[in-house]
Length: 311
Image (cartoon, rainbow, N blue to C red):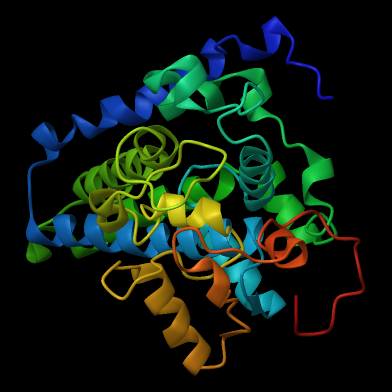
C-alpha cells in the first residue's frame, strides 16, 4: 500500500512559480513588439515541432515504449522536447507512468477529480512533489547519461532556443519585417505558453469532458477538439484502455497526427516496430488476456547493454 504524500510536499513552491508567471507576462510583450507574419509562422512551426516531440517521443516513446528507434533519434527528440520548458524526458516519463498506475485515485498527482481543475492543469508541478523525478519508475531510461544530463540541466535548451530566436530576429531585421525582440516574444514565449496549456489539457479537460468508449478504471475521455490541439492525444479514453499502442485514434475517423508522422518516420527507417492495438481491444467491451493487457502498461524494465546505434 502506498503512503500518501507529506502535506509539505504539495505546497506551492513560490520560487518556482515566479518563472512560470514571468513566461506568461512576457506574452504581453506582443503589444510592444508588434505583429509580423514571419513571427506568427515561427510560433506555429515551433508549436507543431515541439508538440510532436512531446506526444511522439516524451509520451509514446519514453513513457510507453510504443515503438523503437535509434539512440541518436532518441536523443534528438529528447533535445527538442527539452525546449518545451516541460522539464526533461526522464521527469516527464516518470510522472506519466505514475499517472497510469494511479489514474484518478488519491495517489494520482494531477487528477481533476480529487484536487480540482486548476490543480490538475498547473498547480501540481509547482510543488516539491511535482518537481521531483521518481527514478524507480524509469529504470529502463536512466542508463542513458545524455538523458540524465537533459533532466539535470533542463533550463539549458530553452535558454539556447530563446537566445537563438533573438539573434535570428536581429540578423533578419526590418528587411524581413521582424526584429530580435519580436521573434523572441512570438517564437519562444507565446509559442511555449500555448504549447504548455494545450499539453496539460489532457490532465484536466480530458479527465472531465468527452465520451467514454471503454469502461476504464479512471475517468479518461475521448475529446476530438483536444485531439486536434494535441496531435491525437485527445483520444484519451482509447489511450487509457491500451496505453502501449503507438496509435491513439483507434478508428479511421479519429485523427491522430502524431501517429501519421510516426508512420512516415517508420517508412524512412527512423523508427520501427510501432505497437498496434490488439484486435480484441479495439471495440468497446473487447477483451484480451492478462499478458496482452500488461504489455499495454509499460513498467520499468531491467537495464540492458545498449547497441551501438539502437536504444
